[in-house]
Amino acid sequence: MNKFTKLGLFAILLATIIFSSCKKEYESIQSIDDAAIQTYLKQNNLSFTKDPTKGYYYKITAQGTGSAVANQDSVYYTYTFKTLSGQVLQQTSDLMILGTYLGYTDQFRINSQTVNYVFAPVREVLTKLNRGGSATLIMPSHLAFGKNGVSALNIGSNENILVDLVMYAQSKRHEIDELEINKFITNNNLTLTKDPSRARYSIITPGTGTVAINLSSTIAVNYTLRTLDGVQVQSVTDGSYSSTLGDLIKGWQLVIPGKLTAGGKMRLIIPADLAYGSTPLDYDIEIVSVTN
Image 1 (cartoon, rainbow, N blue to C red):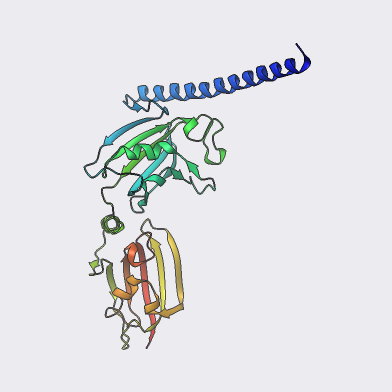
Image 2 (image 1 turned 90 degrees about the vertical axis):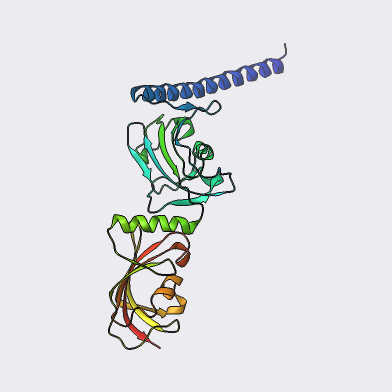
């Protein structure tokens, strides 16, 4: 056997050992994950189905009575990510319901991390539901954050992740707006008038000005803008903001004329399509001055 043949055989042997070692390590991670999940299910007297190909576990808690969905369909859903010990990693609000194509529901940023995580089991389980359905998913660590975990999120090594999923029956943005706005009003015990535009408003004081507001009016305003989950986005309190009403969002254009004059104050809840398209908005508005 010449020198080159010996070197070739040694290289093949070394590669085989490395491959076998990596394969055994991967298999052992799968085994550790599966054993931990089985223990969790047994301790909590839970019955889940195991995906035969990828090894995640899921339980459909409500199939849903709406239509089935495909990757190209828009879906609205909420989720909660937590560890099996109960630590909540991220939770979406039913006042800020996510909407995207079903095919993109496997992409996440957890707690403002810059990493874009891809969790295919989330999309696959949502695919099993009809609109209006819900499910719980347990992702083994090798399909979630891996054997090293993520220290910034306090996720340990081989941490299996439980995901609660809800897909809403609504398939259109304006339908979800109505759901969110109605829930917001109920949660906060508000009394608001529904405008024909579908915006909701409450006039605190109509104002004492004599100049009527129209789309050509330049208005100086104080305002506070919040999303429905209570997060303040913007606030102007010194009267320094002014604009022609016709240049502002549709919700302002449709509701303010005929209802307020200078000195007037109102609370205004605007559906997404009358604002910036992504979510309903909650405004406190004060008209400081009006110029025609």
